Length: 163
Image (cartoon, rainbow, N blue to C red; front, top):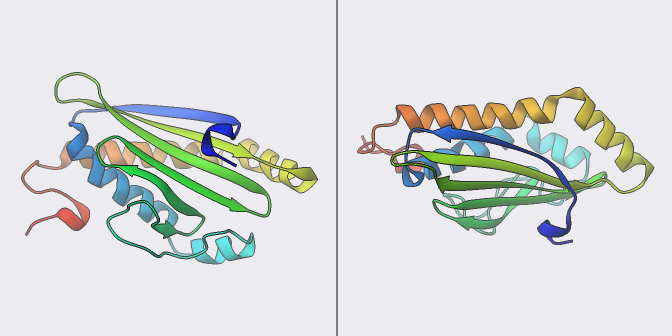
């Protein structure tokens, strides 16, 4: 199933006081760290995720994986599209980064997912009524915004940080 054909679930956005080139390394770093926390590989195996472990090139590019996701598209400064599936769902999380006004960027996070069958429907209900998904996405966006705005342009971040 293609990303565009998955049903739209939600979208969240934030305005960042930094240009897209400054935001991009923070975006990839925060996303990877968020889904690579302790216990994520175990959870990915428990639900039979297609991508249960971290593998592939770093920094993130097409083909990179981390628990629950693989990078379907990575266009630096523009789009990071993640795809995944497990026994209850097929899903995508798409981050779109665009210039807003001089020195500012808009970062949007769109979630798409299909939940087949009775167990998929129950999983969807649990995911959406718990509020965990919304809290997690909003927390990622806030962290990316904070790090991007605090980062001095000459220093970079994550794997790009200079000493």
